[in-house]
Length: 69
Image (cartoon, rainbow, N blue to C red; front, side, top):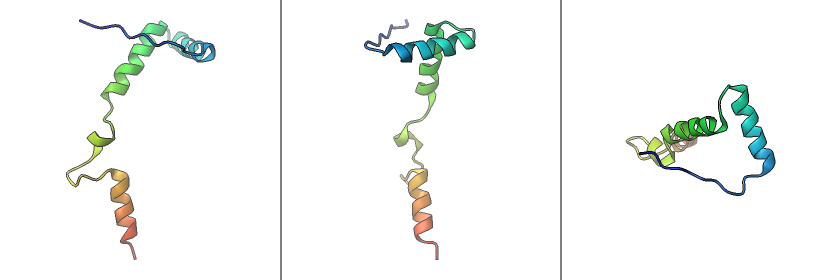
C-alpha cells in the first residue's frame, strides 16, 4: 500500500512554479511531484555509482590526470 508524504513550509513561489510546470505538462501537482520523486528514487546515489575499484568516476578521472606526463 502506498503511503502519503507531506512537505511543510513550501514557499509560495516554489509551489506556484511547480504547479505551473505540472499544468504545462497536463498533470496535477500531485502527479507531477510523484513523478519527480519516482525518478529521483531510481537514480543511483554517489556510493551506488562506485565501480569495482571503489572509486567514483570523478576520483578515477583525477587519478588518471595526476599520472599523465
